[in-house]
Length: 301
Image 1 (cartoon, rainbow, N blue to C red):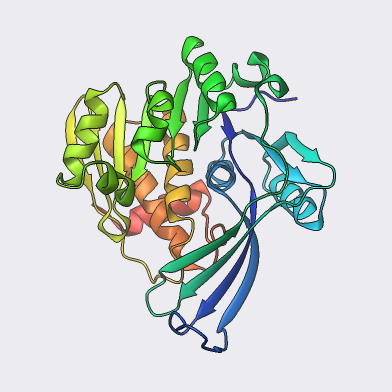
Image 2 (image 1 turned 135 degrees about the vertical axis):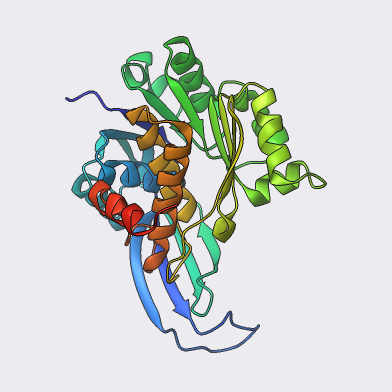
């Protein structure tokens, strides 16, 4: 099997996306404007974003042996993601989320039903499952991600993080991460009195080679050896902001593989994150590289 460029460890979900004219009140009966069913999950969507751009990706995750698990596997295979380590647990149900999308703004609220199966254990993966790739993507801290990040760091791979837990909980993993890409809400919870640029600088000072705070419609702030860089988001007609951060992560990992300079990487990722907001769902509007290049040419700095 072809060696992947990126290995990702995380949860796969099935998202039921319901577009509403506004967020409902308690006990209100509201008619939906639209409905879509799509696979989701931080790692899953980031890997699909990178795959559509042209990277070879592999996911390490567990699903149930239910219809949702079959749906997750089939979609990842269709997107070209290596599912050889998408493990199935008999008798368990896969992760499901219901996402309410506010039609006027594209903002959303998420309700999650966690998977009923067990988490992947450290004995279920080996060093050979990780090394050989150029990047490792992780989104939470557990024995498996700590073990994998340690192997990746020792092998000279780049470790990228999208934190699903607060700073204090994820700090042991953060110490093994080269590129933390964190949302503004995470940054604010950690350092509430500091602007995003200060949070990115703090992450850089603590050992990151590149530290990024994403700011939604306001773009992102990047700190690296060259200093602080503010990258604006691109103006698009927003249908749904679901998955914009995942798209950014996938695009930035793809850009890292290209060895571009930092401003080009950040602008490319910002474009992909913005473009992904143009349709309902976390993956519907993920672009190919040629589509991104055309978008950037039409939207010069």
